[in-house]
Image 1 (cartoon, rainbow, N blue to C red):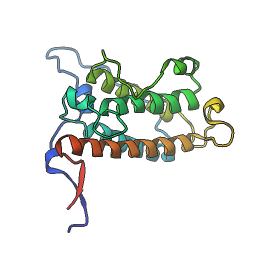
Image 2: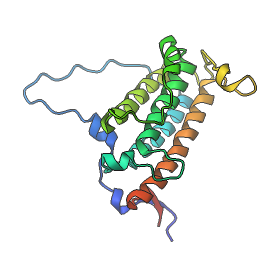
Image 3: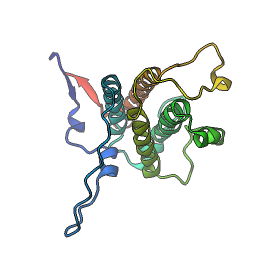
Length: 207
């Protein structure tokens, strides 16, 4: 048995939903795009934690690559969630909630929290590209919030005591990043199990 982890043969060379949605068509003859404006690099600790989070996000999107809409909507575990429902939960209950509501204190996001009855349930009219697109948008917005912080010790702007009480809470951006890395990695594992039950594909195997 080799010591390294390797990607399942079925997943090598495939494009993730993220790459498909992010790809911009070329426009021959058009003027070159303006040079991006420079933004300060995040603090080293934040950059390291953000890189870990991005790895887990890539896992979430990569394990779903190649699934059709029926498979993405199909519950395969007894608890009844679907792959799309889990991604919607990550977009709204995790990325948006922790970074834009709790850390940034965005008043509009906080005000709209009660309008989300159950993020795990996918609206009938929502397409896979809608759900995956929402996840990508929320991760990009979260990245902007995170990268602008001066330190991983930055304090939270808001805490939902009505949800968690006063006995447990996070205090800093570091706390949130570690929480979201852990939760995203946990849910990526859930998606691994669902994908293997759907068609046998695995994200990582020990060889």
